[in-house]
Length: 516
Image 1 (spheres, helix red, strand yellow):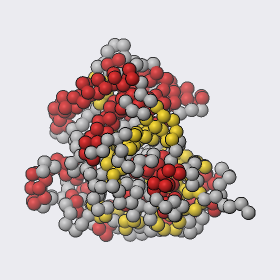
Image 2 (cartoon, rainbow, N blue to C red; image 1 turned 135 degrees about the vertical axis):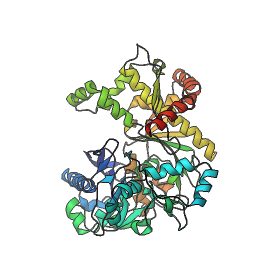
Image 3 (cartoon, rainbow, N blue to C red; image 1 turned 45 degrees about the vertical axis):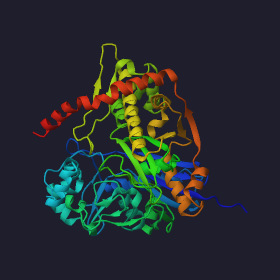
Image 4 (cartoon, rainbow, N blue to C red; image 1 turned 90 degrees about the vertical axis):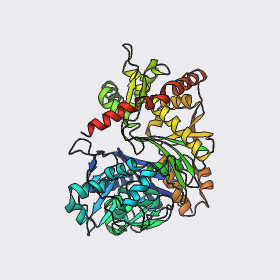
């Protein structure tokens, strides 16, 4: 009698697409269905919203499309998990119905009215020079904006969930959230991986109450069963077990085999990140916590380049029409053809240098992007290569920062995410870091990370070390070119590193002028 294979289903809800992925116990991607989605809509400049029901309908559709492929039946799935984009928030009423569109992580609106922090906390933040960071936290928190401009919505908000928690609710009927998914402007204790304590300052900077938050479940733990309504919508078997996964970046780290601090994990995604998995709490920058790891009780120290590879999409939209049209004729992705642009330009982009901080962060509120060194011989090919180089320079800076913070040299680098499909981007990465760069055997590393969690949760493997050894495999490797590495090292040290500090006064002036 033939033994029924053990398969895991992972739903990966990204910013630009949703994917249904089936993995086996060896980490092989057995089946895949992908639907490109409308990332967001904007009623005002800088807004990024999407209807929660839209996400649910796309999840249902991607599952149904997966089963229609044939070959893999829903009954062959042992367990499933959901990994999602981070920091996107959903307001639900007492009946579990959305009250308004979800505010997504890309949203740039700021609130101008919020609670006044008690004097003793204000004094502490002043002494430790974090007053601006706390104020930015208040301005960016979607809950504060809703409380200010839509108070009737906030008054009706019974539950305030991350997108991951909302999809869990639609699948299982349970108001639960994986600890590994909690990244956002919420009263969360990142050191102890639980909602903030009663006297924590975070309760003073957002209007969220403990009652509005879901039950937290450790990563890799049981969340619930697929209920009847979800089974009908998705074609999933009623009663299928759903386990707590983690946010997409954390799953990418695990899916890349990044389970020790000497392994650096780069994500070439909409947001580019450099991550290192730690067993102890170490802040990559003061007042910036490490996020929950995909491994329960551990941490991901992360340096983020907000809207990193989003710049590639921006370039495609504004300057890549020729490649877009050609790709349509060839039935390819336009990004594949952009590698031809990179190859037309030497390392260093003939003196064109990009600084990729196109959106502010908690530690660089005045940040702006910059491109310097323009000359009449520069083309859009130079512009495109400079974008890739600038992102990688910033990621190298992140690597060096993390090494200083946790005291462990990073000896291996693995690159994943959509941008890793570009061989040119991978080679630039190897040259800038002057290290061998590895690409995993699958581009679906966030899905693979969630599948590894399922393999351990269902006791197919005893621990993450063995699961990664069996399920994570080396794909292509890229070795540095000595001549390019020497050139990049000089540019990085003498031009890129000093650039931000020299431009910061101008950025600051621009930031202040925009507030008036």
